[in-house]
Image (cartoon, one colour):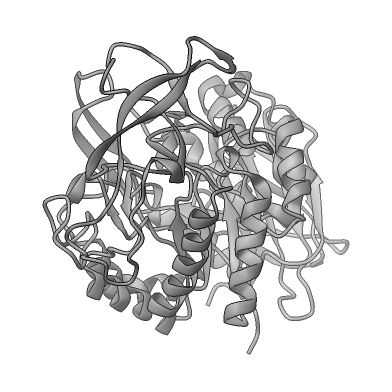
Amino acid sequence: MTEFNGTMMQYFHWYTHSDGSLWKRLIGEAPALGAVGITSLWLPPAYKGAGGTQDTGYGVYDLFDLGEFDQKGTVRTKYGTRSEYLQAIKAAQDANIQVYADVVFNHKMGGDKEEEFKATPFNPENRNEAIGELQTIKAWTHFYFPGRKGKYSNLEWHWWHFNAVDVNSMDTDKKAVYLFEGKTFHEDVDLEKGNFDYLMGNNLDINNPDVRKELYYWGKWYLDTTGIDGFRFDAVKHVRAGFFVDWLNHLREYSGKNLFAVGEYWSGIDKALENFIEKTEGKIMLFDAGLHYSFAAASREKSNYDLRGIFADSLVQDHPELAVTLVSNHDTQPLQSLESVVEPWFKPLAYALVLLRKGGYPCVFAADYHGASYKGKGRDGNEYEIEMASHKWLIDRFLYARRYCAYGDEHDYFDDPDCIGWTRDGNSEHPLGLAVVLSNKNDQTKLMQTSLPNTTFIDYTEHRDQPVVTDENGWGEFSCQENSVSVWLPESALH
């Protein structure tokens, strides 16, 4: 069977409805996603969160509760029940789509009981600066999972399984990160705030032998239970880098499968990111945050943005083999902690830049594909109503072009600040190739050479009615509209 370019989809967003329908929707939609060229799905955290049915899964409470036990006021999670989750995974795999599980090893939240112990308060903005003496504090650090009653695992979590919290019930007004007695902040984490080991909730002490043993055991249990094909690691900049490699190697050996892995290290190319890449030995791909920020800037600045620099400071430029390229994700959506909006007019240009080029493993975002809406309170307490447009029609066109024509050598025409383009030559299995032109100012035409002489090209985005016929050397004048992108495919590719 002929192999084709892979494409991931993030099959959820922050405002996914909390009615428990996501897993059921995937069961029905998987065949259609496979048919358009989606080859893998990143699913949201499937275990019970502290917020019950309203929890996106990142407020991790019980890793073993996949929507099976009555905990946090619900049996199902935001997305459905354990049975539906397992059915959804099978439906995707039956459609030749791999499934990646979202794994949160940074913290736990929603403890079942408070405990008293000693800790030292540190400055939240500088974790190298103590702002008080060792003192007795009280925090929700005892997890005994009363609804599960020891099924799958009988470990109860206590304060010594963590190293820090940011809430002390004895002094709720004090703003501090409390480092537990006898503990240290982990090394090999991001250097923001002096040491970015602590992010939120009860911070897991990865160096604790009970914690490590439980996470290794849980990984094997999860693989045996779900049969997933890989992992997306949340918040990797806050966890000792080497742990992920150790854990992943253990599970790859256990399963006999080359399990896929991508980490969320939300940072541009810098010393800390390069350190993570070195410590993880290139075994974990990373989301290209730098490229996303370029897309957001280009969408804001419009014709003032120099498109020739769109890949500057991107992971895909420096480490293309490690880059998962994306336009947006759940954290960059409006009202979220990393809000960084790519304006709707630029999203088709951005998706062409990730789906139709050689470097990187692209990820399509569900809210960009299907659209999304939200009406409710923001982080500031104010009421908002948000609508995010669907770009499904164009993304499906790009996926078709990616599947059949986006192969072989790449030739860039990044010679104009307002208009860039490239061609792909094709390869022996996919010999047709393509040409892409995009503009952020005025209608544009760009002379580019293809590998196909005397060939008729059609604008598959349907922005241009007139075809382009290349000359005897493969050259053609390919055009696009203002603030738009055109993808030109050989006429013979349109079947």
